[in-house]
Amino acid sequence: MSILLGCIADDFTGATDLANTLVRQGMRTVQFFGPPGPDVDVPEAEAVVIALKSRTNPAGEAIQQSLEALQWLQGAGAEQFFFKYCSTFDSTPEGNIGPVAEALLVALDQDFTIACPAFPENGRTICNGYLFVGAQLLSESGMQNHPLTPMTDSSLVRVLAAQCRHPVGLVDHRTVAAGAAQIQAAFAKLHSEGKQYAIVDALNDADLLRIGAACYGLKLITGGSGVALGLPENFRRAGKLSTDTAADSLPSVPGLGVVLSGSCSEVTLAQVAAMQGSRPSFRIDPLKLAAGEDQVAEALTWAKARLADGPPLIYASAAPNDVRMAQDKLGRAGAGDLIEAAMAKIAMSLVLAGVRRLVVAGGETSGAVIQALGVDGIRIGSQIDPGVPWTTTLRTTALGQPELALALKSGNFGVEDFFLKALDCAP
Image (cartoon, rainbow, N blue to C red; front, side):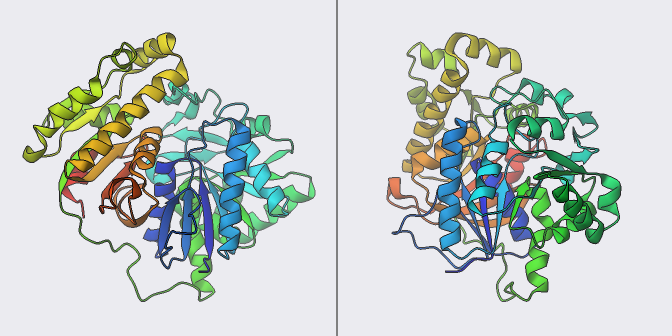
């Protein structure tokens, strides 16, 4: 096969967010969880997104995984490449955004790219290099309490510069508003000054479309899914996009449903509370898991008795104080690992019990569930809320290959009644 756009995403829900953006712009897109093996039948597509679980890995591991994905995409004939990370720039002072971007540039023999995590539709905007979540600076938005990647600085220039060996510049919102030609001129100026990265302001979708047009000649682009908004049009103008099939068409997947939530974001906490008002719920507690209580068995017995009456909610989402308490006792990674392992076992058992529609909240939780089920890849369907589409599996090797419908939600995405809304419009 030969594809137009090859994408690498640093977590599973972020990959689906990007694929959703491309599909909405008419680009047939499939997503794989890791580079496809030689036995995987890759469907025809104009974009392929390879989802990795590398956001919080040691930088060396994240680089290695990203380069393996790049190698596969190069072999598939991709003309342009996209490194996707979270719209809240989730990272630590050591990476992994900067180190991975740098490694991809070297592998592609390039020395300039952009960094633009803006997603205005979901309230993420960049002004003078500062990232806002709604009306709040990133560092005051709740992301400063993230259990794995606390974001305490809103200046993307400073954050990225701390992770990179080469200088970081800025293309401000006035230049962006002036149009694609002016943006490209700003790229050229920064490049001539020795800058290897440009943080690019974006206040609205019109800015993203102008940025996308200006990126026509870049081999590598980095950012959130929003900046991909303008990329399909570049290929369309060149006559390379198909018009014979709806990009978001999915087969019907009837069956029982469930919601699994591991995210502890403020948005997801509100969504959990909203669903508890109308559906039964069961909480997984990492401290009980660590103490040896078989909460997985308890949750499964509880859920199986309720599946026929409508989708139940199983969640580990907790308020910041509860998260800190668990991390103090179990360690930051230890608490997360226990939750992920529990959710993965629950998902597998429920699929064996006939569940075919799963809504999963949280990037780490989604990654654990996908890996446990042995899902190679997914087709991307229509959007539920900005950044979150329904998808259907290409195959699930761990469980006899039943077809599943999956909605993989980043913790910060979706309206308050997202879980119920998603189940109401499942394919």
